[in-house]
Image (tube, rainbow, N blue to C red; front, side, top):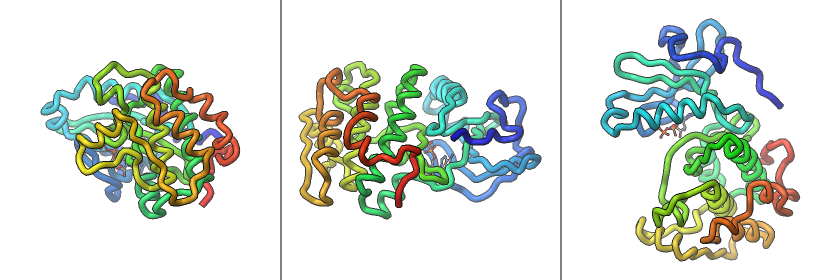
Length: 273
Ligand code: ADP
């Protein structure tokens, strides 16, 4: 179901339309690489948003102007119920402010850590919602490359959103080996994520980053006998996260048709508790 469009925060809202005086700033929601994220409310419409504050000094230090601008433009143009909206942005002399859709239920990472691991129905619902978001992104020529638990945020109904970043556990073999990567990068990561949702730990975890990379390159994947994970779930994981040859990975469309997803995922992405 389409979410109602905020009264004034239209997608066309451009940088010059907003200033800090249009918003009341509330509690911090989290800390990002280059600044903090706060709960905020647009004063006139009373519309609740998340406000990401990025310090220009940091962006200049790491020469990330172009990357940030590109990411902002891409996120601003994407419209999908499972992709977090960026409504607009503005800046002052020292900071850049991103006006983001507020994800009420925070990080999937926290939910997983609290639960230990998810049921097959929960995991399949999350994987299906994320796959739908990725199909939309790929159709719009966007490769996420950076899917990981911390980047997946949850709305009221527990559906899925995503943003930006990178940890070694989620690197794919062709990225570790520095080959050029393509859309199948996101498919690999879906397999890795599926494993972590079901087992509570990432599949290639190791003592050092080097050992994690080694396990990834050797596709050293094993399934512990804990949590009673079904063969159908393992089949999906193997068809995505255990194939060094990216062309053999299950396509996103085929993931949605996989018997484990069909049997377990909630059709509207509402996650069972
Ligand atoms: P960065 O990518 O710069 O590291 P994030 O975008 O991951 O920063 O934001 C840091 C944290 O802030 C997130 O992990 C999350 O807990 C919180 N957060 C970010 N955006 C939102 C949002 N739109 N709604 C709710 N919480 C958010």
